[in-house]
Amino acid sequence: MGGFAQAWSFVHEPALLGVVADSLSVFDPASKPAADIRDMFLLVLAITGGICVVVEGMLIYCIWRFRSKPSDSVEPPQVYGSRPIEVAWTVAPLLIVFVMFLVVVRTAADVRQVPENAATTGLRVTVIGRQWWWEYVYEGYRTERLSFRTANELVVPVDTPVVLDLQSADVIHSFWVPRLAGKTDVIPGRTNRTWFQARHPGSFLGQCAEYCGTQHGNMLLRVEALPADEFERWLANQKQPAREVEAVRAGREAFRSRSCVNCHTIRGVSERGTAGPDLTHLMSRKTIGSGMVFLRPDPRQNKGTLPDGADPLTAWVTDPQKIKPGCLMPAFHLSRSEFEEIVAYFKTLE
Ligand code: CUA
Image (cartoon, rainbow, N blue to C red; front, side, top):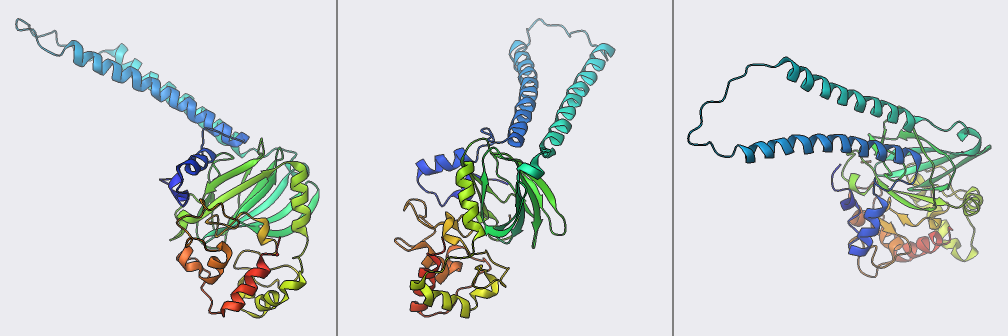
């Protein structure tokens, strides 16, 4: 996994790149599992850094101290073997490795330890990795059962344990939001579990961390941690079926009668499509295309991914292959007016 910030390279402005790099930093954890991993990393870095300084220091000292041979020198005494020295340089590294082993085992156990109250006070979500986006099935919040789906942006409350069951619909992916938790593989045919608890509100970015095909680098993650009351409002809205706005009826009918419905669900309109993202509350998200395109762009943010001045949603619906080559949504051959109607309809899906 190289060039982590590069995956977000559609952000060309240095100022924004700084913001993105900050929000991906493993050194600035915003959740306990990420803090445990950072602490372990710093401890191992301190131990190995100390060893490096001692070894390199002795090496440099010897090179300097014995840099030339006095002309009248005699051969120094030749010593073969020294039990005390050999015992020392065997036992000391063994102890160091043993200490690091214990720290790793303990951290691994801590990171996996889901808080006991998560089942009654937390948020439970099933994450499904797909080529090349993330689907979230909200299963439950506190004692309430939920059953709606969203895509790409995981919205969570702050100071609340969030338990994620990870599954894959196709190949192996890896779920990684560095400021919240470590990487967890997302493997077909099995369910892996991870969790985090955001300490403060904010957007936490991440990235699929296992090569999964041509658009692996554009399989971005975004976790939005909201204050409790804002999250409750978001949740209440998501539970509703799609809004019905009379003025965009033509777009709704075009969506319903075209092949859009084979892949996409809009609750209350058509619910058989499961291959693509659920669009019921599309406009409540910041991005589409798995973090690739900002729906309401700050013009600096979409640079490089969209033609200048293009409306993001129109550009995506008209030809997703131009923005994300290889993605599983084809370009459809609809009339211009049909595209306009469908996009106008989508924009009402708050
Ligand atoms: Cu999904 Cu890489």
